[in-house]
Image: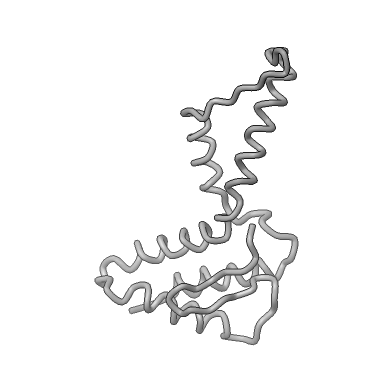
Length: 136
């Protein structure tokens, strides 16, 4: 998982492993979320809050797709080797429904155990709290 988050609307980066002064992250996120929801009717702000948090999670996981494909291919190779279906050093992987479902599940990963540093989680919780407490 990435540890730097780019706030697109506020055009700012937050290093989630760094401790910041009080309100620094909250002010940036509030500014970013305000711009994110500027065209949103107040009845749909809750949906935007969830979308924003989903977007944060996706941006933190986005660069790991190639690594995930490598892990998937390696696990298929190990499986075929273990069950004895690997013949003549030929290896075949189908990127089929199972692969697509696996990629989808991988993309829905959560924040739990994302980083070894407690400050990362504290900053992430502060971002979520700021968004959830936002009032238009």
